[in-house]
Amino acid sequence: MRMERRRRQLRSFRKRRELSVVVDRTRAIARADILAFVTLRNERIRLPYFLRYYRNLGIRHFLIVDNGSDDGSAAYLAAQEDVSLWSTGASYKAASFGVDWLNHLLRHYGTGHWTLTVDPDEFFVYPFCDTRPIEALTDWLDTYDIRSFPAMLLDMYPKGPIDAVPYREGQNPFEIAAWFDAGNYTIDRNWYFQNLWIQGGPRARMFFSKTPEAAPSLNKIPLVKWERDFVFASSTHMLLPRGLNMVYDEWGGEKASGCLLHAKFLSPLTAKVAEEMKRREHYSGSREYAAYQETLSTEPDLWTKWSEKYINWRQLEILGLMSKGNWA
Image 1 (cartoon, rainbow, N blue to C red):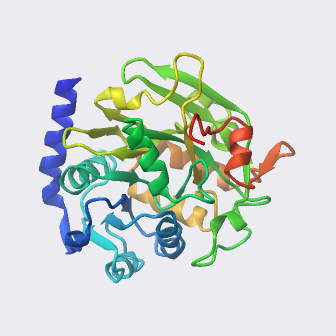
Image 2 (cartoon, rainbow, N blue to C red):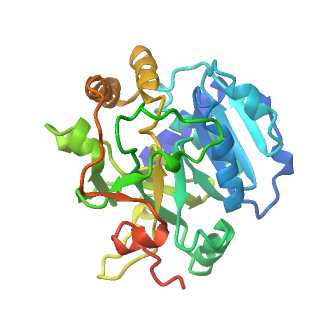
Image 3 (cartoon, one colour):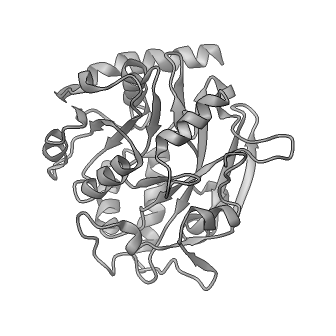
């Protein structure tokens, strides 16, 4: 595992050459700041709410890689005073789906900080997030010398066809995509990396109904107290050293955990899928996007009579999708 970690560190070091600085405001980062790291492409319409959401949680600086956007994303981000921006036209796939770029930035700028690595359609929810800033969570984690914090990816969706209600810039996406699956999840253990492997939800039952074992994984570890020798091994699904992946309790108790509300199933998803199918830059020959394209052509409704409407983090705790553990 040490050799694997070293190999990934070398990959990220080499891939740093693909990044060009657009605007570097990292000198403004204070020692105690919690930082967000993001890779994106053509997400202009999502950015105002995304940035506002995480600023309200307590994120102090955003370090973002723009992968060839042509929708104004880069210009918008460059104008934000709490954003440092890099651009690249290089292959997302060849950079381990953006992980190599982020591993470099995390090592260079994230070391010693609590770091949150998310996509522009992922919204971090943790215990007491409605009353406590993210700094309260990281202070508690520091008290118990916990270096990584998990969050299950929870796919949110609207009632009715996905593209039926247009998403407006700056809008809370969960005003439209307000529903989720309360059950329908499988959990396995990855013995090699020592992490849990979670699948299910609307993607498994709708887009991968014939091959649910091929459905995307929902386990993520987005919040990490970063050190120089850490690397993400596969998106934010798992890390090295692999002890960082052991974020569950093996002795029958409950460790604190969160959720990432996933606003993927929202207009204009159909156009996004069409674009990504042309680029073929996603995992396994864009198999996931091929499944989306095939099913979206039928204008599916992901909602069922068993769907739950999102209320707050306490609802997710009651349903067993996250836990406050012994944080009171």
